Length: 441
Image (cartoon, rainbow, N blue to C red):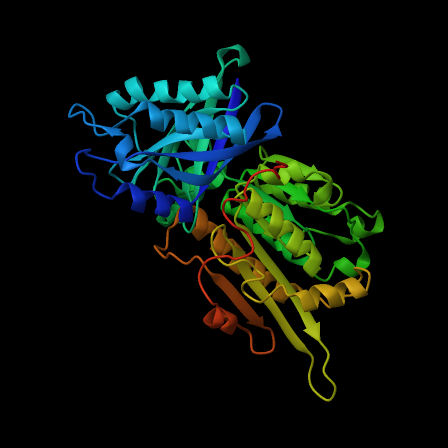
């Protein structure tokens, strides 16, 4: 049976909720369509990224007091035409009240799958269905051509701050409750979410090794890790988990990371790439959240691009030391959250054409970068704090733009001044319509 994961950005959900809350002259509620594009992330799993909301015109509603809303054949044909022309998935969408995972009513279960079947008839290559939203959650019913077998919903994720995972995502979570008793303040379902979320870590060096260690302590059990480097003597001043023995035999960094994870999570599911992440991008696409501790601006740009296309929150950390004549060395770094629908690292002024060009002029070799264990630890610890809040929402904050600057000389981590100069709170470089695999029309 093929499993399907659906991702939709919080920005788009807010737009849909706002439109569907408008009163209609006789219908009790409004409905619409959303479209999404799918990609295969494993042999038995597809990912559908929802990209666009389609309104239904007022004239396409039929007066029927037995249901909240009924639409006519013209509206349904419009959805079918979109499914056929754009070769995409089409979902009927409406809104329920409540805050937890919304449930379908009996009327929903009787009537709405018929609309999804019409989409299947128009385009049998894609999965179609019904999507319901409430004030902060989502749920779905899926339909596929019968000859293709069965399909089931793995999870629906709303990508925002905080993220929403429907109950299906974590209902079979398995962990030792007593072990995580002191983390219970994170929320009633927090440890379930932590144990089921899949995390991608790109770069297992100074910052990445701290990240791996803390994720394992936190209780994360599903990892995708990327690093093609090996342990050397020059790593031992900052690489958590590495020993003189590892350096002597040039052990792969991924092996060190796996040993670190398994020491705390013996049954963890770990997928690793002993190479650059670009060699297996589909593995990154399967992750719910990605964290990066990489060395170059170009690599950050490329990671952020794929994370934006597949609606994956990306948390970036990095540090460096600048040598200034006649002054003490200046240690600095950053912690940035890149979240679909909100400013990216270019919008925030961290990635610029200038720093990318200067780096490219050195043929991608920025030379030896000074690194120390404590600065990486500060940045990684705050990244894990951000990650935990992002997936559980335990703090109650709702901060879609995070850019923290680290001053290693002053031992401070503060909000970057660049956020005060943003033109708007929407990203101009990664439109929400451009999600999922690149489409050649």
